[in-house]
Each structure stands twice: as C-alpha cells, then as structure tokens.
Image (cartoon, rainbow, N blue to C red):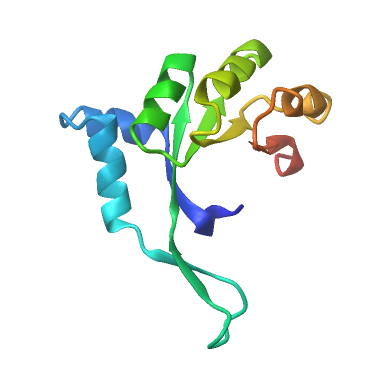
Amino acid sequence: MNLGDGILIKDNHLAALRSRGLSLKEIIAKARQNAPLSLRGIPSRSNLEARQIQIEVEVKTVPEALDAAEAGAEVVMLDNMSLGDMRQVVKMLGGRALIEASGGITLDRVRAVAETGGDFISVGALTHS
C-alpha cells in the first residue's frame, strides 16, 4: 500500500469540510466522485487492471471508526488508539473495512499492535530522524 493507492482523508480535512456542513458520507462520496482510476499491474496491453482507488479516513475514537466504515470508507486509519480500542474496532467492524494502525507506533510496540488484528501498521519510526 502506498500513497498512490488511495485518498487519505485526515482529521484536518474532516474539520474543514464539516465546517461547510458536509457529513462524513458526503465527504467520502465527493472524494470517490473525484478520484482517478489507479492502474495496477505490469503496464502491458494484456495485464493492466484499472480500479477505483480506495478512500481512507483517519479516526481517533471507536465511534469515529464505526462511522467511517458505515459511511463507505474502504480503509479506516486508527490514529493513536490504545491496544484495547484497536481490538474493539477490529471486532466491531468485522471486515467491513481494512484497518490501519498509526500514530505512536514504535518498533518495540509493533508486535502488540499486530496482535490486535488490524490489516496494516504505519511505523513513523522508520522514517523519522
């Protein structure tokens, strides 16, 4: 997964768009409407798959995670959540959306985060100096 695979709607984007009266469902719909197709695979005539890119929403609480999945996000990014909250989101979403754990993830903590059952882990320690 990389930045070309989707649109990431972060908390500051949500705040700005909600201040204009848009609901999360409307924000995701507008992102999807304006999203380009992502081309995956080897660029040849016979092996090129075009697909709609994924919409990912950053959340900070369990209720926000549920709202994002119900509004149609394909990926829900759990930002700075406790391990208990991560486990709760994984259980409650039940595969309706992919789950990315992010924020405060250290190499010492990555195994415990992986054991919560999410799909992806972002480790800022890999790139932060």
